[in-house]
Image (cartoon, rainbow, N blue to C red; front, side, top):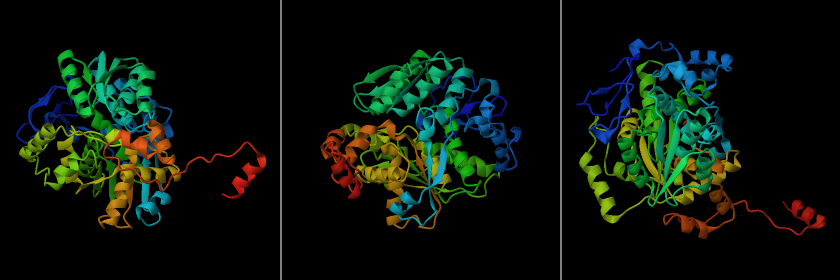
Length: 465
């Protein structure tokens, strides 16, 4: 346990390791479970409101940058940064909306399915919630360079914070051919130095961790515990949108597992502080071609009081290496074979009595089309959440009367090619992108209709609609 005034970060995942590190340290590598650090606060020294409802007072002071931020208006719940050091660009102006169109598709009762749309963040994805916190810590330690590996959203987010704040220069590592062009365009446009590795995301992450360690460069992937602190705020806004009532389920796509890890930590802390009386259940949804967590979960891997079966994990990764098994999915944002936050996610699943499942690329793109027709354009990975609810409803795990919140992680324009290909019924394009796509049907396609440049024929077409 460390104090709230001189907060350190520690390898708290290992119950036998109470090592702490000064707040001014630049993310040292540690031994133990996953080699990850955790943030633990001495809540007795933090002035936390007696009720979450007290945060509503800041709605009237939104001209103040910290109160405008959908992360930092909850700053008492992530109290590691002096206010004058906080880096914010207005992140977190997101929407929680009840959506019956998607709900009916998933098999939910009217009024019971909600979409938390993170595509309205400045860079177009949920990553800004974490990057404002990571950028703040980078400023606190005086970082001159920051780096990340990315399937696209992380690089776009880091690049926009660097370009707006001008506090540090940015290097982003991406895999060769493993990034949606809409996301790559952001990194390029926001003046980040982009390095394309001849490999996938896992290769890029391995390299960037080594580069940052050797070159004393600030690492902004979700191995960074401050990233997860910021991402907790997504759950604060969900509760805010529900009038501070706890839903029955939070359903989230699973890639590097930073969101699920952050959500579990948020609810663990809120329950500890007496600010909620129960926690929701958590469902993490993998893509079929990128399903490390689900496969390990089905083999019995659990948190086990902080001692998950590392032999099982090691054997699984050994088989991956021997078979050169890589992640393949059209949902590129969750195309990750070695999720770095595996251990923290297992903790979150225990805290939230959670579960894991997977959905096919076909299910993802069908759900994406439904979400779009219901008013929210999202990137493919986002749609895994609604596809997951549909599957869990079919299996009887989620009841139609449960209150369910699906996290939509990124904006539709992150990957417009997938949208156009689906509505054009272009199975060949999907087949070249992912050997696990299996996308051969387009039941919700909305292709443009060609007509001659003739007023009468145009009117005939409209009358036939």
